[in-house]
Image 1 (cartoon, protein in one colour):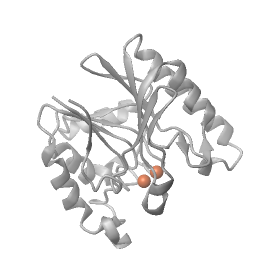
Image 2 (image 1 turned 180 degrees about the vertical axis):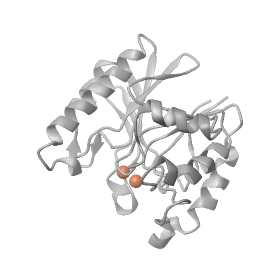
Image 3 (image 1 turned 90 degrees about the vertical axis):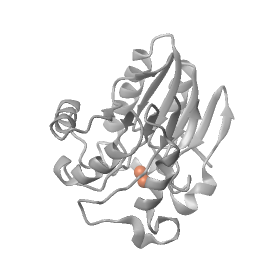
Length: 229
Ligand SMILES: [Fe+2]
Ligand SMILES: [Fe+2]
């Protein structure tokens, strides 16, 4: 049994935004993902850290969910990214997955999942790019509440936290998020969202007891990162 993480699959099998047009690592990315998942075994868990599908609705994202569901792994935990416009209520998403027989897809949102004795927590998070518009303070506060709800749900267990947005970046710290990670003694934090040239500004390694790791698909060469055996 192993735990993996990967974000930013940016699938577009049922919509019209394939990422291959960006060239570079993205050329043939769907096949790369399929090959990258060959290391994952049927009993493993994979956390999918947001920006999963370009579909504008669950219906439009159906082919992408079918693709993700068919990949190896007993459980794939889905986090919301800033491009997941299909995201709706947990009830609707779970209902849609059940109707379509997507048995490996689960939502990580205001809750936590267990991997052995380790709690897998997470939410979308916050990034400076979001600092615009009158609703931004509200959205930020909501994210903090969601993150805390997820961390609280974990109780006294060891906690790993998965975010879509990086809580730190060269020249940027989202102190409120980092404070929560540290207050709840999170030991590992995986995040996505950073692409291409932004990879070099990513922060990895341990800071104040939290080990940070970028798991955006193009950063990982489309192979899920093994977090734990
Ligand atoms: Fe993103
Ligand atoms: Fe992304």
